[in-house]
Image 1 (cartoon, rainbow, N blue to C red):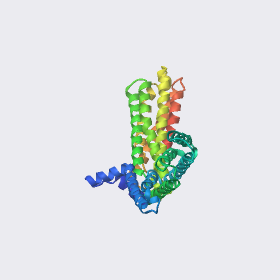
Image 2: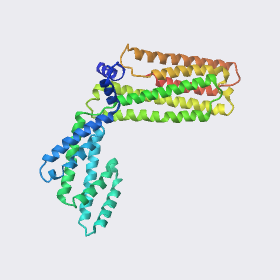
Image 3: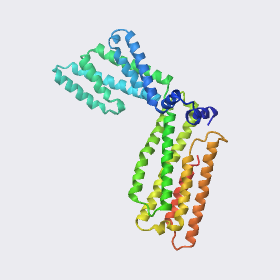
Image 4: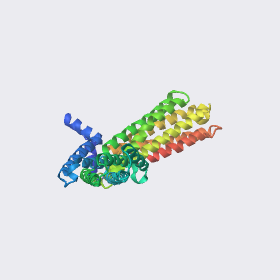
Amino acid sequence: MRGVDVVEFRQTLTVPRPRGVVAAAHRAWLSHPRWALAVKGAFAASLAWSVGLVAPAPFADYPYYAPLGAVLATTSTVVRSVHDSLQSVAAVLVGAIIARGVALLPLPGLLELTVVVGIALLCVGWRIFGDMGSWTVMSAIFVLILGSGDADYIGSYAGLIVVGAAIGIGVNLLFPPLPLTPSELALGRLRSGVAEQVESLANWLEQQGPLDHDEWERRRQGLYPTIESARAAVAQTREASRANRRARRNKGWMASQTRRAGALGTSAEVVEEIVRLLVVWESEGLNDLALGQQLRPELAGTLRAFASAVHSAQVRDKEGDPEAGAAADAVRRLDESLEEFREAVREAQRSSQYDYFVAGALIINLDRGADALHI
């Protein structure tokens, strides 16, 4: 990671900040990107409204439609705002055309509305509109009821939506969202959750009998939302980096988050597979074949080293950094502990008639987890 990335990362997460209301507000602002989106959306809507007021007739008669396009374009990432704006404009035009076409037919008011809404709803699911398909129905109803299918109204409505969307896109380009802090916090929760599960598993092996299937299933289900939240947060940051002028300055931080998300996801899978192996064998009364009393504490020790390495998984920003050095030491200790467990399994095989197949499978999974943490 480059020096400027390190400075920003430290300022955001690790450097002690002054205490007080301002510092608390700053942390809250970084942790809740929706607040920035709200401010940008309000600013873009106000600007679009002002433009609508000074637009030539007949646009100036309907200035309230411009803020709709502005808000739409500022509630997502830079690239998505352009994509969503194009889809919404297409949906608006299709809805307006539907209303205009039906208005030309000699239909009574109620039947006219029924036909317009029915046709518009058929168009909502068109792939070309994506998530913006609902604008087709909204546009058709506005044009039919408020504009009575009038061509000037249709042009003003669609035109102001386009102008508002262009203003929103411009504001988004000037102040692009890049939610690095929320994704960092989500990774921190995932790291703590995985490390806690590994520690609990080690305690169970040292202090209790065979693993309880229901208990560990509840634990697995409890961690799953945290895993998905972290993956979604990192994916959102990665998407937000496209066409984002802030992305180059934070390139190293984003790359680090992507690596850590992969490592922690793999670690969670490794823990799940270890639990599955132990639960399946021990629930069938095959505890001695799986580990036996001799290897059970050896595995617990290795799991503690694994938990320490998971808990230390963090940004590797520059050579000589103490946090990066601590993470490297934790992974090195995991490698050493894993080698000790491997040797203990070999010794158990030599002194027993069993081949300890499950213990071998556990080693393979722990190897995978250790490799993932070499980030």
